[in-house]
Length: 347
Ligand code: ZN
Image 1 (tube, protein in one colour):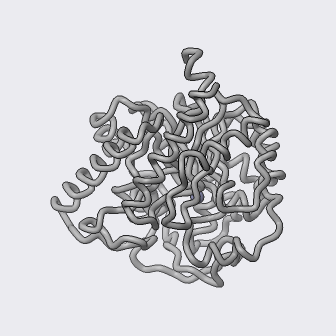
Image 2 (image 1 turned 135 degrees about the horizontal axis):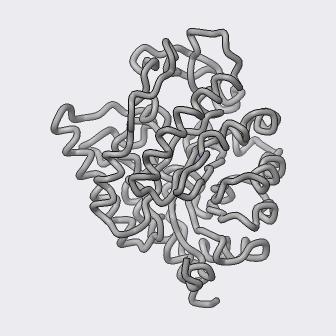
């Protein structure tokens, strides 16, 4: 990597962006598609093109397909596996009941087995639209196990997570070989079950990321910016989760860590523990429609620069922007890049 990029703050997003209204109902987490068959494939392709272009126009350094081809960040992976039923759901407690008592979960009915590459064709299509580095997101093993109703039984959570880690690794290797710049594992559960992160979560994450050429990233957040999550955040007083997980990540092979700071009470100083990694710092709140100014983004980045070097810092969203309006998401993309540019101009 050339030295200029090593010395400047870059900009990216966690992953998801809102679906256009002609593709799926806006503001929902599991919206059904409004198209099917060939029309759906064409609509998804158009939606990806729209968001690739928006991220380029905004000036992001690393882009995603906005997860326009998946109904949900976990189910996109599930639907490519053998043994998971995403049609007949089961209610179960998830995320230690932090946000809801119970929530509908896909069911593990066999295996699971890997049928072959799931997102590789989608990645190739995105790479053909842009010269920018492209990130692909996958659900992390701990979050998968917490989001699935296991109807088979006989395996501990840790054993099941390791099985999913093996399958994730096959997909991550295929994506990496096809040209993904970054493979990101989404692990919101790392902020919920901090003891399990130490016991087996890190081991499963390392297994999922083993041997890939692309940069290895992990996204750890306090959930989407939905009303239930916001209610929990407003009432929460303990923000010590990253203090326990980031030192573990500091010792790992993971290259990039995405953390949420804009809409949480987290002290930005926690990033000092991972100053040798690249930090995707959440400086944009995904829980409201108000677009941060570039100056607010720059101020949050400036605060972070007390703890890490600019070349290790990305201006990033707190989480996915799936629940936001297109207008707000576009505005926030611009603020991320413009805020980073303000910092870089002053460096
Ligand atoms: Zn998130």
